[in-house]
Amino acid sequence: MSIIATSYEQLPTLDVTTSMSGLDFMQGILDGTISGPPIGATLNYHLHAVEDGKVSFRGTPLFEHCNPMGTVHGGWYGTLLDSAMACAVMTRVPKGSVYTTLEYKVNILRPIPRGTLIEANGHIQHAGRSTGISNGEIRGVEDGKLYATGSTTCIIMKAT
Image (cartoon, rainbow, N blue to C red; front, side):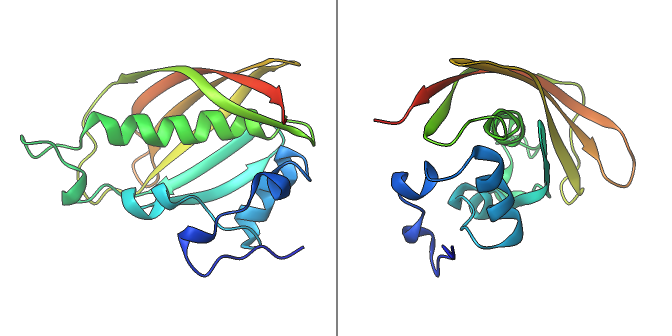
């Protein structure tokens, strides 16, 4: 099944999304048969790796992602962690179901220098019939420094 989008306005429909498991869907984004989310282009990050219960995104914060003080905005950290942690939950969502973030928490440990390649990793802790819990971290790819950690709770629901 090919669902490559020529633009972000052509994201997969709910019918396509629920026709496969969350893991298959995420692997489709990774291999390019399914269009990635437009937020990745906006915030300069992309899906890097997917396996059952684990997801990683890589990206680089740019000047456009800074707050008025010139440091990387906390929302950039939060979005990267939300993507990694929630998509780790998605790898356990069964065919015919959907999920969304209920809440997430971010702990910023140090500023990420603009232009630094980072990796945001999400690791599943629990996935049941109705909830998924995941933890995550942001580390520098080259320096290995831990920049932020997070946790999330997601709701898993049957598609209607």
